[in-house]
Image (cartoon, rainbow, N blue to C red; front, top):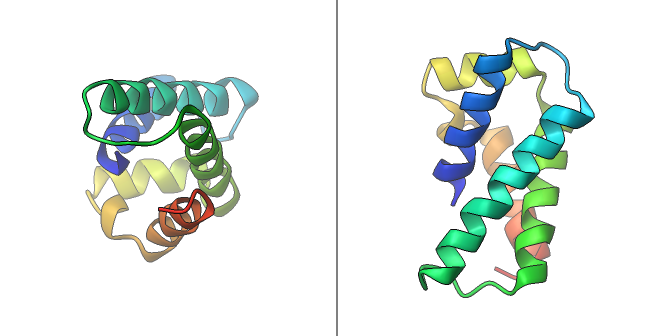
Length: 101
């Protein structure tokens, strides 16, 4: 789930070349995450409830926007270090805990 959201996030950010978060970008990130989670739930890869998908995706989008600038995320993704970044991993862990996972 984390990797799919990160790939989607990278595509959106890099394609826009934006350096400040906007509602449009954050909404796109959340929507992409929701689509990914729907797909994983439908295929049986996760057993999350619909509300948990929204909670997780909103939480991670919020955490990313509060802890990173757009350029930070671009740098982390370009250097392939996002998935090992301790701040990002804490955001993901906090959001998983929030939905009881």
